[in-house]
Amino acid sequence: MQAFTKIHGLVAPLDRSNVDTDAIIPKQFLKSVRRTGFGPNLFDSWRYLDVGEPEQDCSRRPLREEFVLNLPRYQGAQILLARENFGCGSSREHAVWALYEYGFRCVIAPSYGDIFFSNAGKNGLLAITLSVQQVEHLFSEVEANEGYRLKVDLPSQTITAPSGEELTFDIGAALKERLLQGQDDIGITLEQGDLIREYERQRAAQRPWLFPDLN
Image (cartoon, rainbow, N blue to C red; front, top):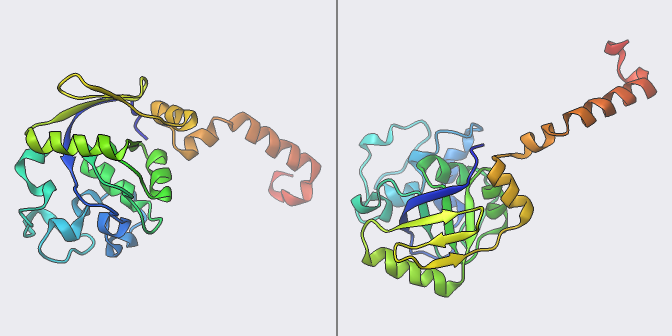
C-alpha cells in the first residue's frame, strides 16, 4: 500500500453521526473481492437519486445535488471530517477501499467503529481521533471558508489549520510505523521471509512424510 507521511488536503465535512459501513458502501457492491472499483459507489445511496448496481457506469447517474460530495467546493477533497462513531456497523473492508479509491487519505472524527478503524490502518487510510470540541470547531471553519485545507503531518502527529493553529493527535507506535512505511499485513509477514523459510526447512527435515514432493 502507499505510504502516508504528509498531506495538505481539501476538507469535506460529512455532518452526520453514526455513519455505518452500509452507508459508506452499500451491500450490493460487496460481491466483488477486488480491492478496486468501489470509489464511484462511495456513499452511493446518498450521492445518487437512483439505486446503484455493481459494474454500473456512474458517470450518467442522477446526482443528489445537495449531498456534500456533490458540491463543487468539495471536489478533490482528500480529508473527510466526520462525526461520532464513524464507520460503525458491519466489518466490511470495502468501506475503507471505497473511501481510499474516491481520493480520501485521512478521516478526522471524534470516534470510530473499532473494526473500521483497524481496517483503515491496514489499508493506508489515516483515521485521526480528535475531541468533540475540536471537531466541532473544524466543522465551523470548513463551512465558513471555501477551499479550507489542513496540513496533516504523521511524523510529527500534527494538524495545521490555515490560521496557523496546530492540533496534535495520538496514534499507536505500531500503526504509525505501518502507515509511514506503507506496509500491509502481507508486507509485514514477508519481512520475516528468512525465518519462515528456515522454519519450513526444519519442519520438512523433522517430518519428511508430510512433504513427499520434497523427497
